[in-house]
Image (cartoon, rainbow, N blue to C red; front, side):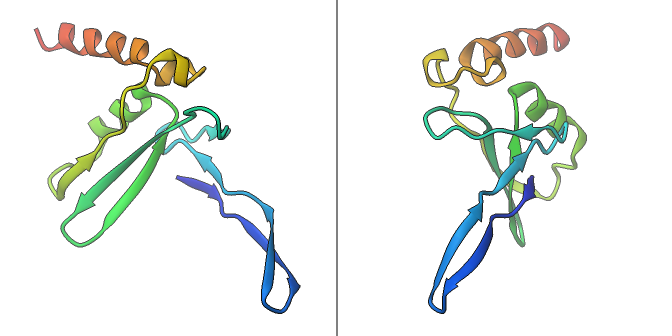
Length: 112
């Protein structure tokens, strides 16, 4: 979910300058996601419907799975999930392979 689109101002007729970047928020909990170009700070998921596509953003694997449980999946033809990354690629606990494994174990216990 995009909370705020980038803003531009006109400097010269053919040139514009960005005055603020896009601000992203979690599509589940609505929390603002602070971006860092050097590491993974959010999960970007693409939902492919019959007529259009939507890209959603999540702050953690838990929020992603909570949102998947709430939405109607009947009209979705394909979901593109992000890679599960090691802790060295993200300092955010909810995005790493460790948090994904913990969530998978919890889901496995529920489905026994």
